[in-house]
Image 1: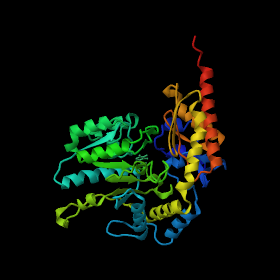
Image 2: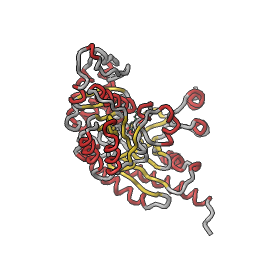
Image 3: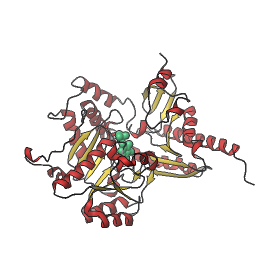
Image 4: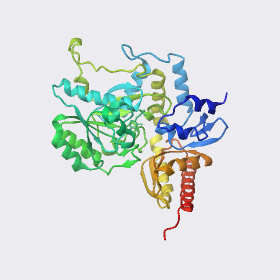
Length: 430
Ligand SMILES: *Cc1c(COP(=O)(O)O)cnc(C)c1O
């Protein structure tokens, strides 16, 4: 069977213009080894974006592999609706232990998008049950919270979201990083707003937009002052990506609701959780016939295999002192990127911890410069994926210093190649 032909015949890839896809030779991944992916031809690539921002301790980590295999010998799936199971309980306990203070309740789902949907619905229903009609949310311009209709409603990236406008609910957009703008929106609308939702510190999908220091803390203070809930979407930033376990912890912020997904299973399996406080939880308590139940739940909510992978992932943070070991690598990454920021054709390098966006400049949209860089990087043995003309680097936390050097060198060479190709075609200005 010709895999590539079958892919072209039957698959429809996410966030992909299929017309372009079928014109290029795809890489078909067969296996992986720590921080490298291996394709069906046996070629090896550094996993420069953690398999879409979710791998943490590397691929095929023996401890996570073992935890999943062990769980497989017990039960692969059993529902959380009306039943419970050990991995879900133990992982919830662990999540509460490492989360910002006050987040004591864990509601599972299976993707970042559903974790955000759940936070929005919980916030809305919480106020509803307090007798308050609060139907609006404040989110940030260029926000990304997922691809389901509710999470798209609070999203703010025109390219992804504007087509669906007629399907979306109305949201107030605040200017990222601008405390005064958030204060203005809250003072004008506080009584109708259920929650403010933000990606703490870094807006990933927007192209790694880094907020000014102190912004998140000020947003927390404003939410308190105006009596509005704060949702932190830690789907991208969580599990060490910014250098702390959660990005909120850099600013000692405890949100009312926190969404986690991507890294929660170490990048092994789909799992997400929405964490919240006793205050929100208690707002849903009542007798059966009061119908204050949170009517939400997915078939695979809290899947035992995924929870087992999650538990092993969190244990590894302790056993391998992942965050401690990471700090040197973050410093090294900063050093390695300094010359990249000065490259011809690079507008800016934005970074927080292990989340990096390298913005190219001077390319027309149709040149697909970001994509060209990823193709050049593949030829050199690294997988990166751009956001438009922003090259993203977000390696697994387990990447070695040598691999990190190789990843940045490949990225640098690939950018140089694409910029040089452009410059040779562009006639010099008179
Ligand atoms: C990726 C992401 C999501 C969506 O997660 P999925 O698992 O892809 O649905 C939500 N919020 C943020 C901040 C993300 O980066």
